[in-house]
Length: 122
Image (tube, rainbow, N blue to C red):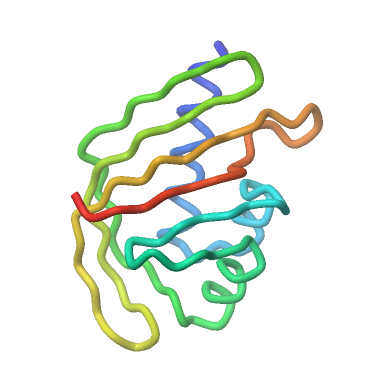
């Protein structure tokens, strides 16, 4: 498998974990140092994200990828996702077309892990 294929695979595993609410998979795919900026401008850490999935505060019921590109530079990669995400957050339903920009770092033992993300309305 090429580095690009491995990064695409990691991105798709992350999407599947989001849809399934799979906290164990998210824990593996998200770096402990993660900082993500949500579509509302809020700052979210890995602990925040895992807690929201674990508690049911954040539930993704649909995630449809429209486009996915990547940039790969050595042990760093960036994925650019465009798609529709549906679910509930804090009990309120949402249905949004979003762009996710994720920066990934390759860990020798764990593979590709997200270290930074930015989410914005598309």
